[in-house]
Amino acid sequence: MRILDLGCGAGEDLTSWGVTASDEVTGLDNDGSVLALAKVRFPRRTYLRGIGECLPFRAASFDRVISNVALPYMNIPQALREIHRILVPGGRLSLGLHHPSLTLAELLDNALPKPLPTLFRLYVAANGMFFHCTGKTVGFVNSRIESFQTRRGMRLALERAGFTGPSFQTLPGPAGTRFFVEAQKPFMRPFVASRTAGSRSRPQAAGEQGEIRAARALKIALNLT
Image 1 (spheres, rainbow, N blue to C red):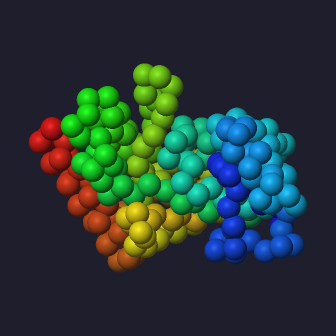
Image 2 (cartoon, helix red, strand yellow; image 1 turned 30 degrees about the vertical axis):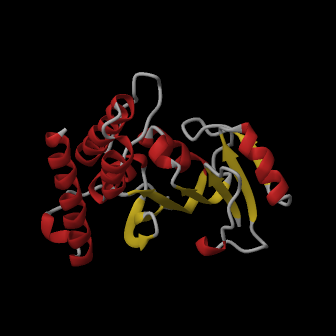
Image 3 (tube, rainbow, N blue to C red; image 1 turned 90 degrees about the vertical axis):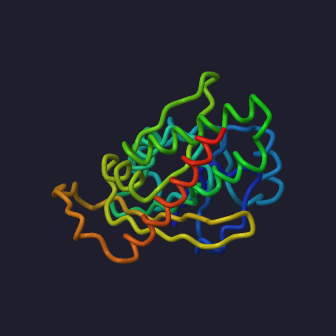
């Protein structure tokens, strides 16, 4: 299987993502210094420099794309369109993302009361709320971009990019709640039907309620700053 590790950093053991020794892994990151370390750690893999919003690959080049906590630092709609382009029909997308609780913790524990870090974390919080409502993100004044993600926001963004069958999972982790998303590029362009609230499963609704509670807590924290 041809796998792209998008935002690979210094390289990662992808066994927990179901990657085996027989898979052909290509890593992509925009930081050349970490790519040099990745090449030492995993010499059998191919590593290239690039960004998720403009992937340097032909259409239908990969069977699967894995991106572990890299998409939150990208223009998400643009990156998803590029991922969709380079996946084969039926190809899979596996994502590790930022839960809203992470942004709240970063703001309260690491940013306040320092002015510049607080300003940036307030932008991240606002960008995450904007993504939740619209499935879109906006950049910061110095071209940096970061946001948190929610099920609602990811459904909107994935559907617009052409993905189907998204599934969501939240798990506890040492640094807080971990948020995972799986989706697929369909073999044929799907017909997009209107959704009703009753069409969501109970686990999905429960997960969204957790995200809403985290977003409300974040909003309260913002009102207190």
